[in-house]
Amino acid sequence: MENFKLLKIEDSLKNSLEKMKFTKPTPIQAMAIPVALEGKDILGTAQTGTGKTLAFSIPLINKLILDKNAFALVMCPTRELATQVMAAIKSIISDKINIKTALLIGGEAMQKQLRQLSNRSRIIVGTPGRINDHLKRKSLNLSATKYLVLDETDRMLDMGFTPQIELILKFVPKDHQTLLFSATLPQNIVRISERYLNKPERISTGSTSVPIAKIKQETLQVFKENKYDQLVDQFIARKGSILVFVKTKRGADKMVKRLKEEGHSADAIHGDLRQSKRDRVINSFRKGLKRILIATDVAARGLDIPLIQHVINFDLPQVPEDYVHRIGRTARAGTEGSALTFLTPDDRSMWNEISKLIDPNFKPSPRGARGDSRGKKRGKAPYNKKRKFRDEKKFFSKGRPDRSSRDGEKKSFGYKGKSSFGDKSKPSGYGRPDRSSRDGEKKSFGYKGKSSFGDKSKPSGFTNNPKYFGKKPSESLGSSTKKKDFTFKGKKKFKSRSDRPKSFTFKKHSQKRT
Image (cartoon, rainbow, N blue to C red; front, side):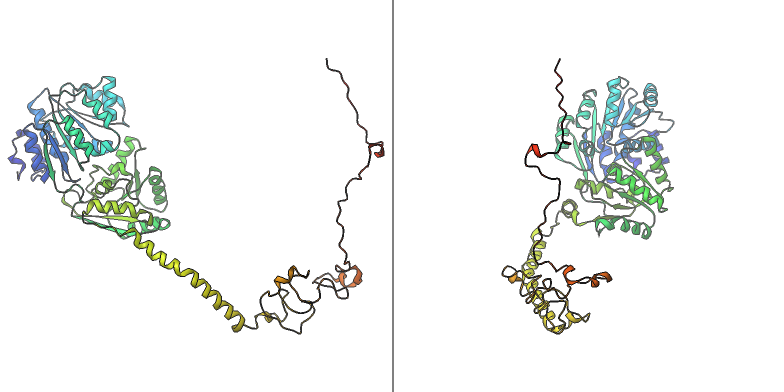
C-alpha cells in the first residue's frame, strides 16, 4: 500500500486523512491497516516513533462508522500517551463522522469524565487504573466493546498493570477484535497474546531494539561531581529544544530549580505532577515557550513532540530497553536528531547491557583487563617505596650536611655528647642512634653524657621570665634530685569512729511505720 487513497475505508475517513495531509503511510501502517480492516487480531512490534497510533486508529474509526452500536477501548500505560492518542483520534474524526469520545485518566476530575460517558461516548481511551475505577463505579459499560487496543503493552506490564488489565478484559465480550502493539516483545507479552488474542497476525517492522538510523548517538565520559557543569555546557553548545532524562522525581525538581535560578528556560515533568500541570508543561514545551524539559521515564514512552532536537541521558535508565524509547523522542516522523549519554565510572555495567541490546555484535572489554594492569602496579609498589627510602637517606646524609645548622644552633633531638643546650662546639648529625639505650640508663631523650636536667650549676631549658634568673640554683627546677611524693591531700582520715570530731553527727529518724 503506497497511498491512503488505496485503502478500503469510508469516504468520510478518506477526506479527513486528506485534510490532515496524511498521504503516504509508514511501514507499520502499510502492514497493519489492511490486516486490521479484515477484522483479524494483530500482534505488532515496531520502533517507537513509526506511526503505530495511526495504524490502529484508522481501522478503529472505520469499524465504528460501519457499526453504529459498536464501542472501542484503547488502553495506554501513561496519562501523556493516552492524551496524545486521544488527540490523534480526534484529529481524524470530522464533523461528518460524529463519534463522541471519552478520556479516562488519573489526575483529572471524575465529574468531567462522568459527563463524557453519559453522552454515549463510543471511543474510550484511558489508563488501566482509572478505567478500573469507572468499572467499580459502574459508570463504564464495556459489554458492547468490539474493538480493543493495548498500546505500549510492554510498558504497561513493566509498570505492574497486569492484574488490572486482566480484570478489565473480564468485562470485555469474547467476540471482539484485539490489536496489541508493543515496542519490544518479551516473554510475558507472548503469554498474554496466546491467552487473549485469537490467531493473531504477527507484524514487525525493523529491529525493535535498534534505534532509528537518523539519530546521532554520542557518549560523554564524566565524573559525578562534574555532571551538572557538563550539562550546562551542552545547553550552551547546542541549539533547539532539549529533553533531559534523569533518574528520580526529586532530581528533576532540583535540577529545574537550579536551572531557573541561572536563567535557563526549563521545566520538569514526572509522575507526581497533577494532570493539568503536566498538560501545561508539555504544551509550553511543544509550542517552544520552554527550551529545556527535564523528565523521568514517565515521558520516555509515546511522547510525540516534533520539536525535540536533542535528547540527553543525564542518568542511565534502569532497564536497557528504556534507552531505545528515550532517544526515540527525537528524530520523529522522518526528521533527524541527536542523543547524548553521560557515562560515569559506575555506569559501565549498565552501558554494556544497553550496548548489547542495540548492537548484537558488541563485545564488552574483559573485566580482568583493568584489574591486571592495576595488579602490576601494585606489585612494584614495595620496591619503589624501599628505593625511595634509600634515596632519601642518601640525600639527607650526604647531600644536605648542614641542615642541622640552619638556625646557627643545634637542635635538642638525638645529639651525642654533653648537655644539648650548653655545648655548642661539636656539631652532630641526624638520626637517633642511641634510642636503644633508653632502658639501660635513664637519660633524657636519648642523650649520651650528663643529664641536662641533673646539672645544678646551670639552669636547664629556656624561659622568657626575667625573675627566673634571680633565683638561687636550689630554687630552680632541677634543684631537687629526689623524687617528690605526690600524695593526695584530701580530708583527714580517722582510724576509728571515736576520733571523729563531734561535728560529725548523724540524725537518726526512728519513725515507726503505721
